[in-house]
Length: 268
Image (spheres, rainbow, N blue to C red):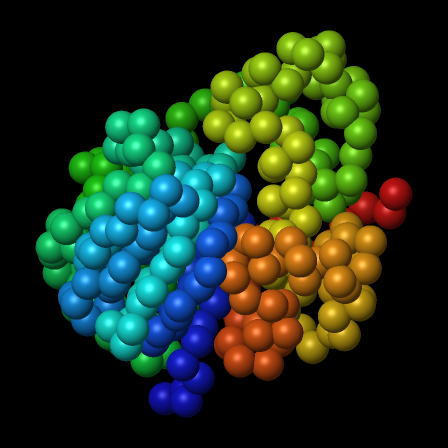
């Protein structure tokens, strides 16, 4: 049994952060986030307007600002890439709300795996299966892969390959669309703008680099940031934690697909 208390498990289209406690300032990110209490005791979410909700689980839409206070109940934070099929399925359950409280009892017997997950007792395969079944418990059906426009798929791949640093004009050429048409179609298909997805790609690549032991400056450059300070500011806005926290206090693992998709950027 590992003695680590904070875990980060990375897959191609999602990652799962597991922690016994967290108190964050105001954060917002491009991923959709599914939060679930490990113990079943409520945690607190505060919206930008000051509205507070105490819940045992919740869905948070992309780019919705919130504060989070998890005081000892433990937390599973499943972050879904905005281009993923799982996110597109969950988006239908949001009903236009930025924060949607959920009764954690909807997870049923899946909750039996929450505490073992927090203790580091579940392998990668079981954790990935748990994440998929948690989404299924909310949507009421298995994860499907609804088609996404092939032109947008090419654009997503180009953004990933260049760590988010590729001009809109070049992306338009990849899609064989005008910049205006691409901007509209991308937001329609993915749910976030090209610019926001490009920034998310940098952040996601940053997270991937913590599977190794690289200096923060190297992590920043590989991830497409100008320097470590720029990376740290962005990371704080997204997660409320400095990158150094991941490097020193979180056990980070990634499967082969995540390493292939997010591990290296094309030179630019």
